[in-house]
Length: 112
Length: 113
Image (cartoon, rainbow over all chains, first blue to last red; front, side):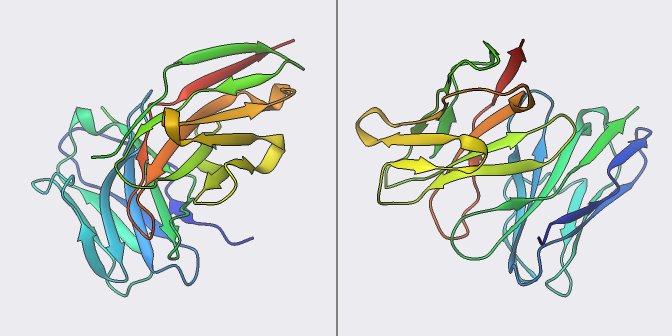
């Protein structure tokens, strides 16, 4: 069964350092989402791509976060510089066109 | 704006007992509703979804949910809980198509012997 891949699974970084997360969606899924999940909360959307175009990045802190999906397939989410409050699970999801989203295993980020 | 409320932060049930997890949503049009389950340190797995049609939907692992438009609810049920069901459960609402999902804060389920 096809799955969404994410790496790394865990990342520990110091405050003010740069970090990057990678996501490979299910083959053929044109829509890709990055969500952030703070401990004890539900996921919240950071950015949505349709193919290589950003559809919604209204909740992305653009002063420090960036996201790209250059060829409309895999995607990278970057944080620079990382802050203590960025400690969270970063989830990637992909979908076709009927609203059902498939999630990857996530990247657990700890900022010290 | 869409919103989801899961009133119960934590529920404990005995193995073999029935389970109902509550979910209330706020959305002006016909919602697309989902239940996801998350084991510790893992991603989210889709249990079931409601788009239209029969208001009682069946999902994986023996779960079902009922859409009640009059109550703006989409409660998740299971007749007999297994120890492996212990996890975090999230209700989510969407507007259909490729719109992002809005999630509730989740309900943590503990199962005791």
